[in-house]
Length: 66
Image (cartoon, rainbow, N blue to C red; front, side, top):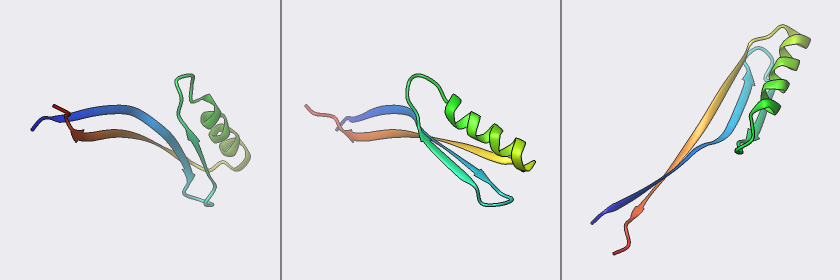
């Protein structure tokens, strides 16, 4: 039995402030991640807090059709 592997790459980004609980998420697309980065910069400038940014990738495994 062959296993088919399909990689989707990064599917979304999640930003979270560890100081105050602020967060933001955006689904990734082929264009850019500038939207989430702008939100992060805005929060840091307004509060002085540190923000963590996570990116999530996805991979699908399935049985190869014969």
